[in-house]
Structure formats: structure tokens, C-alpha cells
Length: 119
Image 1 (spheres, rainbow, N blue to C red):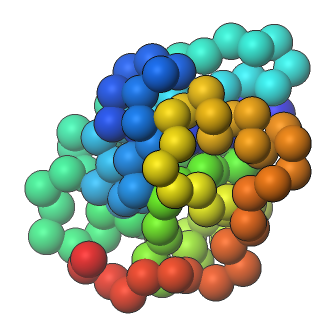
Image 2 (image 1 turned 90 degrees about the vertical axis):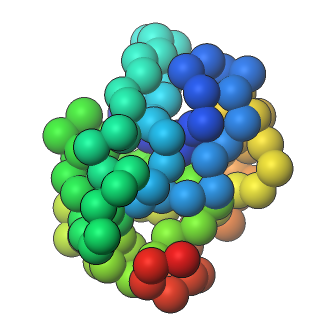
């Protein structure tokens, strides 16, 4: 399974980006192979609306079954759920730390959005 982590940079040592829809990018980590790939999110950074939905489509297209992010708004949450992608929330971690916390089962699953739209 692949997980998508919102990130401010392109490496495992980069900080987790607290935004989902307007994250700088996504690090895609394959839990089976341990391989990592980076996908930029530049196309969604300046959208006046719909960034969360577009970002959800991006991570779905990359094959992710899980997203780890700092916060998720209502439209992104609905789009991810519709795509069968589980959402986990984390704060103040590196991408590597977020992956390890997910593997350890210590991240909270987001059963509902934790932010309003356009934050």
C-alpha cells in the first residue's frame, strides 16, 4: 500500500505540511517496497477554491490508500473518503517521523474534517 504525506520539501527529513489542499507537495511512500517518490502540488497552490478536491484527485491518481496531513477541510475530506482513502492527522513531525508513527499505529484517524473551508 502507498501512503501520501503532505510535505514542505522533497525528502524524508522535510517537515510535514499542515495543509492538505495547498500543501507544497506529497511524498508517496510504498509500505511494501520502502520506495519514495515526490509529487509537487504547485497546480493547486493558488486556486481560489477546490484545492482540496484537486489534491485528493492527485493522491488518488498516485495510488495512495492513506493520507497523512496536519489538517483537512470538508471538501477534501469528502473527496478522499469517496475515493476510499483513509486520512490520518499529525503535527510537528518530519515525513519520516509521520511514516513511523503511522506504522506504529499512533496517529489519529480523521473521521471528520478538522478545519472549515478556505483556511
